[in-house]
Length: 617
View 1: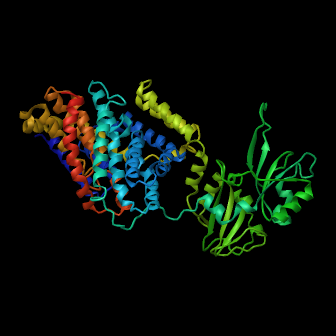
View 2 (view 1 turned 45 degrees about the vertical axis):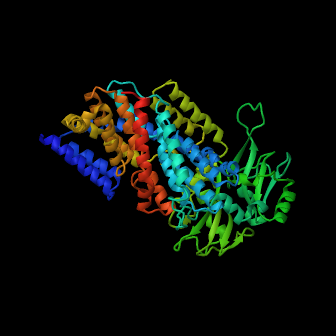
């Protein structure tokens, strides 16, 4: 064995050990191993960085964005909301329907994204039927892993083995080519989980961590401050003395203790074949036009005085119209004063808050008492929370201000959800269009995914590029990109041939079937300790070499690697989804061993029988 081959196996062994011990982040481990290959001269810099331009890496990034669009618009969550309605009072029906829906959603997005999406829904459903969420969360993770076998895009492992087939001159996997195996796996897995749900699954009311820490949503804020009962709509008729006046000139807070929240006005741009309106954030420079609709917050008596003074018409708020204080562009947030805030002991009128931040102060929360009227001369105290309203972009800028105030909750998340509200149908059409492009191979798969990702942004299913980037799991991206060149190192140094020879010599007497079993077992065992993506990257080239040496069908062996890498049931570190539910469900390491190993064995028996039947040698 030459020096470079020895170094390759040494780096590979240390990398796998680091993955297993989980002391260092997996993406950092992958980068360190990549650098080690370059420093030792095994790979050139070009070879080492080739993974970052690999189409699989770009496709995975695009799928994160598409999945985020489904989440933001609420499309994927709608399936979970229908569960209780469909299942009635049957716990068995609920359990089965839940797993079927998880499998269906997971067929078109990553298993990690599926679990992250469904976990809050599952926990809330479990609590509503007075069951422990731990009874549902582990099956959620297992079925999400199995759903990775339903379509080509459902798991990175499928994309990796398909790309390797193309790189070696073989036919790539089609979109639904692996689906029959996925259906068999789903049926077997769901059946197993249904049978053992009351005997093996933890249901001991352990402490559950749902991740639902205190977050103050806009709707919750509106209820707490009772904004709906203090919002009024006023119409500006032609001829009113208020026309062409700016809000700065009107001095509504000082004269009438009122706050102008927003203005609806007719569009003056272009040729209007249909009546067009748009809403404008009300600021000091806002000028009142004829036929504007003014949304004013304050005491009803003061609102009437204001309307009478300028010849304005009071109008009834339509049902749900008050909720429009939160929209794609406008939002509300609660803001706490810091101990050293310069706002302390200042009055609301002296702050110049609207001029400085372009936001309205519309309420004060002082020790649970909500002050909405006559706020102009109120002096702020440490511990006060002030309610602000305005454009989401301005609220996000305020959130970066840490010297004087701290914005409570997650304004970035709320802004993104508000922007995507009502676009579930759009997200559904985009997802279906992307799938059709991939099924009929109109473009290369990576281009189809990129089209879907870009459309999610352009149509507003995601608020902006920043929102899209925030949903890409860069840890996974770096892991895949940094691990792909390891296969190049194994190939250059002869490591693949050596490993495939070991498997062939050990099991070759049993023919291609015996070698296939060996490949499956080794891949599945390593998959319990390192990520399924890293496992596929490592073992797909070895399986390919073994198939070629045995003069067998490489596709059969590639499918075996993809399937075995997805069977991550026996340890909590076998898959990110297992790690997610371990904390939320209060599971212990032995829960995974006790429940996962029997499922692992059952799947092994089923898969080594079904794979050669569907993909003959």
